[in-house]
Length: 390
Ligand SMILES: *[C@@H]1O[C@H](CO)[C@@H](O)[C@H](O)[C@H]1NC(C)=O
Ligand SMILES: *[C@@H]1O[C@H](CO)[C@@H](O)[C@H](O)[C@H]1NC(C)=O
Ligand SMILES: *[C@@H]1O[C@H](CO)[C@@H](O)[C@H](O)[C@H]1NC(C)=O
Ligand SMILES: *[C@@H]1O[C@H](CO)[C@@H](O)[C@H](O)[C@H]1NC(C)=O
Ligand SMILES: *[C@@H]1O[C@H](CO)[C@@H](O)[C@H](O)[C@H]1NC(C)=O
Image 1 (tube, protein in one colour):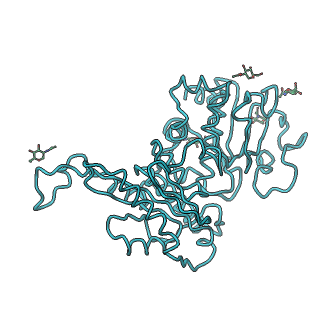
Image 2 (cartoon, helix red, strand yellow):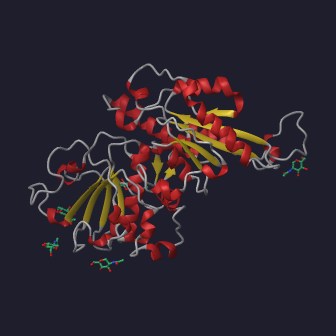
Image 3 (tube, protein in one colour):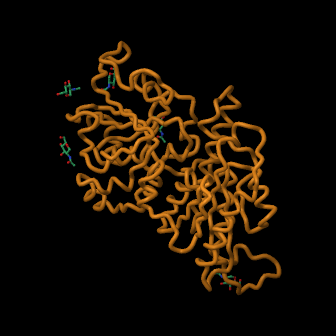
């Protein structure tokens, strides 16, 4: 925090790492941003986040900055960020010189999209992208995570342990350091529902209603988060017609986990379902009734699949980002998780809960039936090195 403040106040030489949002969904954005945050932290740079001039909702729509102000002020010339855009066709690096930026040699950039970036767990990051470490400002973009594998890096593992970080909590710690839910996110249904239904009031008297036994203890709720990603087709077409039976394995899995995780203390079991499909949520409600919580039956928007056409539309996308963040943070309040394998949304929510061996992951494509027995949970190491990483 001190370093960040001093660099911004020009009390130290300018050393910045700026994460440019990748044109992907919120989960992939967060996975990349948090890895880049560690890069900045480990190499002594102030950390900022920018849309880089892309038509994407800024993260400020969903998150406040509780400890360091990561807002990159507007005004960076396009040449500094445009080659990091997903659809950019030209050379993926800076030209030798450019009239808009006479000191272009002070800037470096990197694009870490869709790869497995093994150097993060082996190299001295101060020597990347330039051996000399003499670039004042780095613009980087990533949709890949390395917050666990970076603990394998001999240059940094001691420092990470010394400040109290651990591989299984590093992602959640950095997230809570950078982000707190904004007003928009806190008023979204996903947040409200989690707050009121996943956390029974600690003092049973607070929720006392007529006729209740005044000596009754507060509920001991076992909370199972379920995230089902149906697929991008729910955003593209107006028909959101799911075959409910196709998704029964998720609910069967939740039932199995419920059986082996409930104890004699458990007084109530609640399932918290998030999904991109409104129809699936409606059908699940019909099927499982009041102890199944669903966030909302409003149509979803996916940040990377919607283009703001006018101001009103842009406003909707901002609110859309807030509700996505609220669903993710609401999901994070669960104890155990059943998530869709090839989707970042559920796994990020689950990781933000900061728990241990608590995730079961189902593939929507494969016919293989996961049993969801106690030992069938996903190992965090495996999660860290597959798909988008962590
Ligand atoms: C954070 O930084 C931005 C950009 O410099 C500035 O506009 C904003 O007011 C700052 N926020 C706070 C809370 O200081
Ligand atoms: C490059 O020059 C511009 C214009 O003078 C200045 O605002 C900017 O801070 C400089 N960048 C670096 C990294 O020194
Ligand atoms: C950084 O180091 C390289 C290689 O020594 C040099 O060519 C370049 O001018 C240096 N850049 C700055 C901004 O000092
Ligand atoms: C990384 O390399 C830089 C520049 O060569 C050096 O100053 C620094 O001590 C190295 N850091 C680590 C953690 O090895
Ligand atoms: C709840 O209310 C009862 C009756 O008013 C009171 O005796 C008890 O101390 C309260 N419990 C707590 C935890 O405040």
